[in-house]
Image (cartoon, rainbow, N blue to C red; front, side):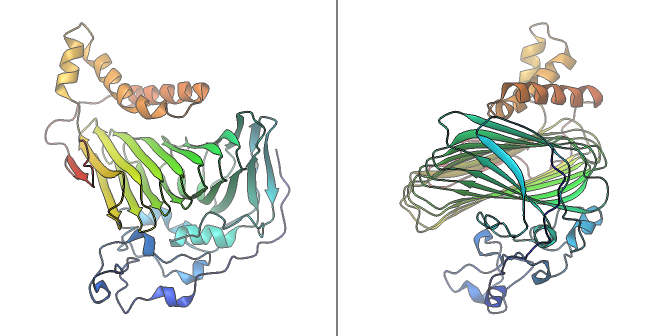
Length: 435
C-alpha cells in the first residue's frame, strides 16, 4: 500500500505544430493518406497519421462528430475531457512475487512517453494532469514473475491516472490491474516489453454500476519479445478502453484479447490498434462480447497497419458479438491497411448475431433444459478468450462473474428482429478471413 504523493508534474513535449494540418484536409481528427494525391480529398481514416500530443490544450473541444468519438456518450464522459482532473496518488493493494516491483514515481519519470503519446483529448487530459506515476517493473530472474494491483478507492470526482509497466530484457511474467468500486477516471497505461521478454498484461474492469472509465493503453514490443494483452470489461456504466501496440523491432509478437458483457443501459467500447513497423512481426487480435437488456451498447473498432518497413508480417484480427435479447446494439468495424505486398498473411473478420438455434437444439435434444443450454452456449463463447489469460484463479473468478451476469439478466431470447448494427460480415487481406 502506498499513499505518498510525488512532486507536481512536468508535461511532456508535444509534436510540432506542423503536424496539425495537412493542406486543409483535416476533418474530425482524420487526415488524408500520403499516397495518390489524397491531400486534396476528404479522408476516411488513417489511424497512423492522427495527431499525438501530451498537451490537452493542443486538442480542440470534442463535439462527437470525430471519427474516434462518434459512438461515445459524451454527456457522461465530458468531465474527463478537461484539464482539471485530480492526478495525485491513490491507494492500491499490490500482491507480487519477489521479481516484480511497484512504486510511485515522479510525474517527470523518464519512462513516461516510452510507449507512445495520446491521440485524443481524454488521454491528453489525463497526461497533462498527472502528479504521480505508478511504475511496475518485471525483472529478469529466470522465474515467471507475477503482480496484481487492485484499485477500488478512486471515488466519484474526476480523476487522472498514469501507469508504466516495464518488462526487463528477457523477463517473463504477468501483471493484472484489477479495477473495482466507483470511479470517474481517465487513465493512460504504458507497457514496454524489452528485447526477448515475455509479458502478459490483464486489465479487469469490474466497476460498480455508476463508474465511468476512459483508458488508453500504449505498448512498445521489442526485438523477439512477446506481449499478451487482455481486456476484460464487465462492470461500469461507461467503459472505454483503447489499446494500441507498436511492433517496432524485428520478430516482435503480440496477442490482444478482449472479453466483455454489456447489460441494460451499459456502454462498452474498445478501439484496438496494431502497428506493424518492422520485419517478421506477428499479431493476433480476438475480441468477444455478449449483450443483454434494453440499451446495452458495445463498440469495437480494430485497426491494423502493415507498413512498408514490415515485410514478413503475419496478422489477423476478429470481433464476435453474441446478442442475447432485443434492444441491444453492437457496432463492429475492422480496418486493415497493407503498404507492402511481402507479407506472410493478413486478414480480418467481424460478426454479430443471436444464438445459433442449431446449438440450442443439439443440447436440448440431449436432455438439457433450454435455460441451461443457453448458459452453456454463452459460457462456451466467452470462455475461449478468458482461458487465454493463463491465471487459473482469475479465470475461475471471471467465469463466475459471467454466470452471475446471465443469472441476473434472464430475459426472452432475441428474435430475428433484434437490433443488430453491422450484420454478419467478413473481410480479408492477403490470405483471406475465415468467418
